[in-house]
Image (cartoon, rainbow, N blue to C red; front, side, top):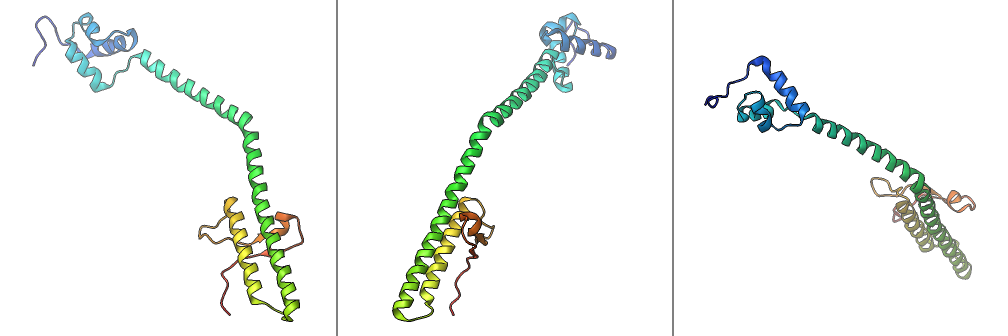
Length: 183
């Protein structure tokens, strides 16, 4: 299909000038076509095929990227400045609460051990496997709860050793909970 009557095809050397006019004047292809004696559909197809962009649009896109980057920087600075201390305070409270749980576990273990000592005195036994198992289960339970709440659970899900001296500022008691073997 050729050009309509009275509309000639532009020469190859005219296209850069037409493109420049399209990209810089802000005129649409329908208004621009008659100025260069070009079929509007031919101009539209060329614009689409070659991806011509109006400079105004390009400037807006560039400005939008710059503004977005600046807003993101400002938002990050605001979060760091305003929320950073609050987040750190919440983290500290969370750790304190986790330590409180661990300390409660230590106190429960001591209570179990004291009760076991009293029972051993009353019965005359020197070793009570049930009390040892109860203590180990309590330690394992509290260690798991404390480590999980702190996000310290290993990939396998088994808790590792926890130093209660560090957690509770108490005498050195290191617990490494494991599954109790049946002896």
